[in-house]
Length: 161
Image (cartoon, rainbow, N blue to C red):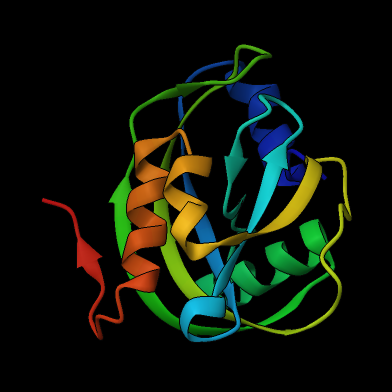
């Protein structure tokens, strides 16, 4: 479902006014060494390739939400390994005029099972991308930074200041 039900209910009250929403990014990695690949989805709304992203449901634990989003969007089961990045993005105006700003929690995840495929209407394509080609596949700088944080091997999350 592209827009969570709770957001639709909020929109009935606030219209297109900017909402502050908690979100997750799941950077899913499969393989090891030179064979590592990152799972990417092509968004149905704007055609951009991104890691899996989504809005948390009210009261949902962020790691649980990251795992849920990956399964819902791609049919892939993952382990959520660690928090790698936190950031607040710039204001976004969606194609329908809704405005939002997202607090993003990015998680490094490991593929466990499942063949990646388009599993909902949020994406038009899904693919595994070689780590060496990920940066070129992503045209949004924040997505490149999130993937870099997940692939860095750092043991602490990055906090933007």
